[in-house]
Length: 339
Image (cartoon, rainbow, N blue to C red; front, side, top):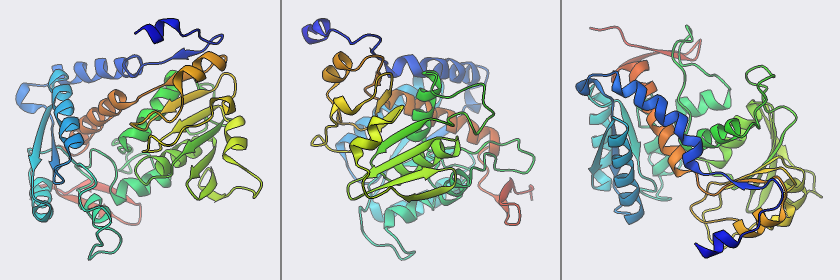
């Protein structure tokens, strides 16, 4: 468009597309699926119980992407009160390798199990099929920084798709230091993540902290600092601006078009990732005034590539088995022996 051609970039500033970051993962996924016979390709089942038009659109896009990449996707539209039973069926069905649910289903409706009904649903998905990595088992392994599901360390844990997409962006842009050992590659880096949701903001803060970063997690009424395995409130005088000004990475994840970060806060050479479906910062102002900034306006295509990777990993780890043996002493699982 005209506006884009007239934009004069600040020195070294650039916009980074999701396609650029996703490309090597899509190549790897295609190499994996093309080597499988067509009847052995993994299948993801998406459950839609909320009639949300945006979710329907996202499901169609997921289906097209999976088809392009040699994977199977099936959308099952169910009534909210049928969802529990439909999930149990899919958990037990060995032809289903992955399950995802389009949230919110019940919003804040309370659950018999405690917490919200949607939280209970997240924990109903079998850990052998949890393509979004949101069930209790994977939350626990993520926060404890446990990277394998088994003691042999042959089966890697899945991680939630959007936080994982952000990590892959940061690796692609060199924020992770390859000279450091695994688990310490973000040491010395400062990150601000705006919005502390349980599906994106909080797990991302924990993952980056577990990789050595100091992470400021900003929410509407509080700001916490995450450091490897620990979280505490920031000093009283800290503001969002003071956190952002020292940050090498800024992640914007506020699900509202009202929220706009002031681009003048962003330090030179920082990476800014807009995860929200709304633009949480003025792209033109950012790229024209902040030298060396790399800006990623959207992550959806990378998120889907991570969903595909998670599905392939679940098939390799568990082969659709609904039956696992849990060893609480080691906090690991193994597929149940065949009867």
